[in-house]
Amino acid sequence: MAPTIKLISNYEYKRQFLPEISAHVLHDHSQLQLYRIESYLKDILIPVPPYRTSFNFLMLITRGYIQQQLETQSYTVTAGQVINIKQGCITRTLELSPDLQGFYLIYENNVITNLFLNNRELDFFFTAPYIQLSSKEVKWLEKSFSLLKEELDAMALNSSEDICLALFSAILLKLIRSGNPGAHALTRDLKISYQFRTEVQHYHIMHKDVCFYAKKMQISETYLNKCVKKTTGKPPKQWIQEISILHSQILLQNLTKEISEVAYELNYQSASYFTRIFHKVTGVTPKTYRSQLKERYRNNWASS
Image 1 (tube, one colour):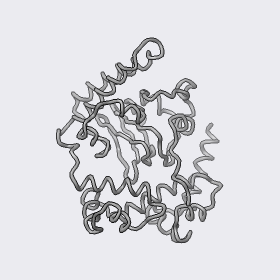
Image 2 (tube, helix red, strand yellow):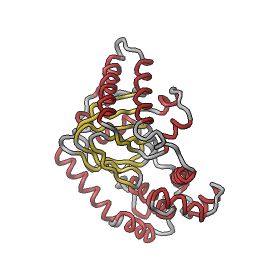
Image 3 (spheres, rainbow, N blue to C red):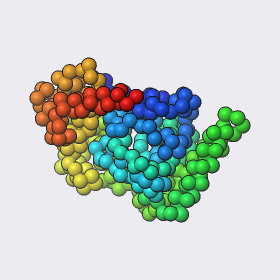
Image 4 (spheres, rainbow, N blue to C red):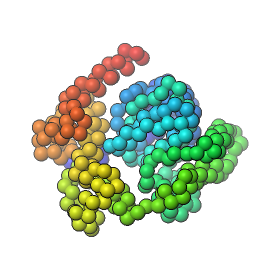
């Protein structure tokens, strides 16, 4: 059966989607990187196909908006909001407003392990991916991001990495503790829902039945259905189908693969059944989606 869909590195992300960035930025492999979003994403090739990253990133929007898909949901992030994308999640940028401004922070998992976060603080990475900030919090974060950028830019000369980590830790704790102090406490329903979606990411190729996940999590199928539906508004079966089809969209970007090959790699019983589920989730057939991809590539080549 097919291996797990590859996670793209920070370098690969820049090379594929940001063709106009400088060589210095392209080859920056630092574990912590910070850019002004209006400069970093200004030439991004919209719409970006779905992808999974080997790194984490968060965006603070100070002006305008960005529309970002995360797994099966689309978020419009506006001024005064932050969105946090974890390593391994399927995501893509759908739209940028012309006046978009803010900060784009990249951080590897190693950076998190170097911070001393308690279990409640770590829950931040498993709850809602975006945060609404007060105007006072936005001003504080803007100043902190500017300081962090100054230190990161100077690190090659004489700035200490410890200072950068301390500033990042302060930014992260500010985000975790912003708003309602209890907002990031995970209920049992939320923990089950998050665990279910994590398991689906790992096993959806071989297992598309809800019963498998209920047994693996050692709960009843009825209880799993109740928790997932209550916390997400969608039943587990729909999540399995949507995550599987998201992965198929990544595979379909390889134009040398036949649609039947993609169906086989994702363990669908037939290409026709795969096509039916794909259309149910996306509203178009795999063939139409592939045609849209080809048209996008042609337009990008013509404008380059």
